[in-house]
Length: 152
Image (cartoon, rainbow, N blue to C red):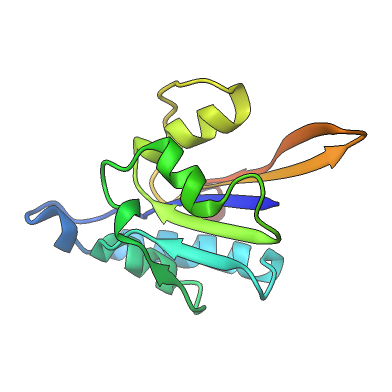
């Protein structure tokens, strides 16, 4: 299985929180990451997205079909993220577009096996793979890309 965690790009301040849209810089961040990700992403990838405006706008940069899942909204737990993605048992690739601190906590759980508060930059992706090798689970961080690496 491949799991890609994608934090929404830079968003405007304001209320209600769920209606906050991406800034012009955030739109550029989302587009830059989508341009990097698109040629590497399998066509059959499942893309699941928080219901907020900023996560939907981030996912739209991929120009691919995605599912909006209410349980991925702000305040979701890392265990919820992993359950919705069916980590590590799903076949193929799942992209989760969501929020901090949940995505950083999810990455920590995947790589360290325990809870921790890891920071994930706005618009960044962390790409994990899980394989069975000789009866053992092997988890790799395949990529960690932030928009500032692509917008130079």
